[in-house]
Length: 364
Ligand code: F6R
Image (cartoon, rainbow, N blue to C red; front, side):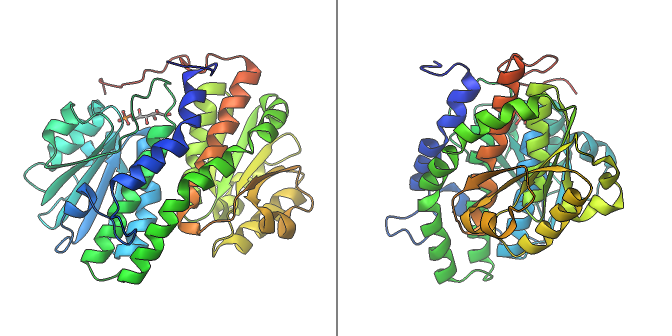
């Protein structure tokens, strides 16, 4: 039930601190030094490539995870949307692990991509919310994301639970492959325990988001920018906004701006910049300044120190907690969801049942 919330989407956004907290507890040891559970049962020791395939938001979770698997486990990673992957006839070999992410477990294109990999890939992994499902039945190994039923058509808690599940899998892969030391694993697991508090802190930006929603809801186009794993988060922010508010939105890797999209910028285009203080922060800020120099109205999403360094000239700032950059895609998903939600509510659209969309896409 929706409880005190006006929409299922609001309820599902607000549940995330608690659900992620349970998910951390479920899959780490009592000493808080190691990832355990199904994620550590997948064997990556002989894997030569990880292929991750999904649709929509689940695909963006794969896209974020690509950065984690490369960084923590040094595994070559290929990602694709299922509707493209299944018809490309891509070479898939025994050294490949093929991983499919799906909330419903019934998405037709994702299932077809999985069937294509059967008998070719060394192992088939399903990262699923609904484990009793077609994709569940066809997987060799299932990693449940434990998000609970997601009713709102726009995926929110499933996305952050997919991310956390994939992060744990990348950590476990790094341990198996000797690219992640026991100390580094313990450090990451300690960070995971801080995740519920970080999510709650991020949620305190909601009043500010409500305020900004009037500005955003009157825009015709909105851009989202990020670098590194915040690039797929920009894509997810844009998808979420367009599907429930019907405002045209695009996500870009901010380094790509000057290769075309900067032509779109003028004072009517809000530009939302996801800027945790990671290794690419300064580069991102200089891209943001290029946007402001052309009249772009920037909504900067960053932490206290990031705001101190970079807020000059921005239109608005959303404050996020200071965090380990590894967790930024999970925590910054909150403002992405809140922005979409409050913009849509301000516009008066049907948030839980947006036009033309179905929760489970069982036809291709
Ligand atoms: C967006 C959204 C969709 C789904 C996509 C895949 O908010 O919900 O993009 O992520 O249709 O669905 P599943 O995860 O059920 O395979």
